[in-house]
Image (cartoon, rainbow, N blue to C red; front, side, top):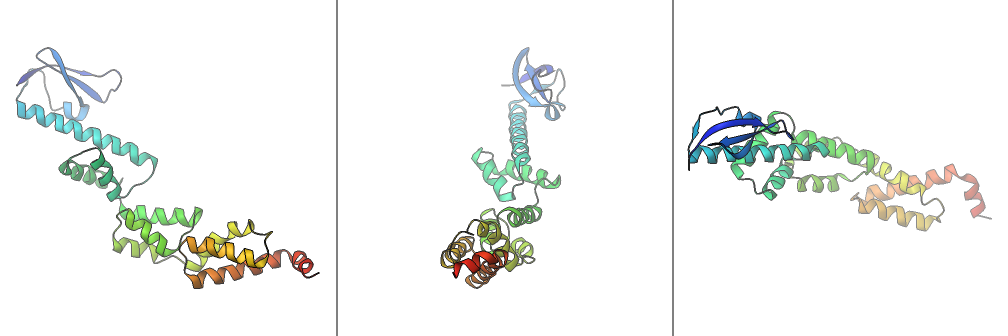
Length: 218
């Protein structure tokens, strides 16, 4: 069924969308960028109408993806999975991903660097654990190797141990070592690194509390 464009009106609630009227009746809405190609009096074929609706669907998916990205950065794989859940076609996904990449909204290298940086600051993990997390996000082996190459595992393990060790100050040496060691092992750090850091944390605690160490021998 064909139709002739009889009116194009900006929508009151969303000035970035245009209501399209065919043969005097409201037909559908379009993004203003898509509606800009239309003109009053233009006759649209069935194929052209279908194409306009496809463009609308693509733009809606694109805008929803921008909202998703406004919350936190995402990997390319995450965006693919998100759009697939929205039942967006693979062709449209490719277009959206290309557009987002072109504008700098999608960048797996920057995503991986930020992911590792945030982990190092707030919840340190071993390189092995970070590697697994990044793999789950669809990051390539080349990028993973690049971002993990600068990590000092000893420093990361020490950072991960510091806050937790303060919570264990009341424990005897055996309990302290067991709990802190298990905490670091769960974070994926190697045994050799874990027990070296545990030794350091225990010694540091004794140095910070010499009177408690003295009293323990009374």
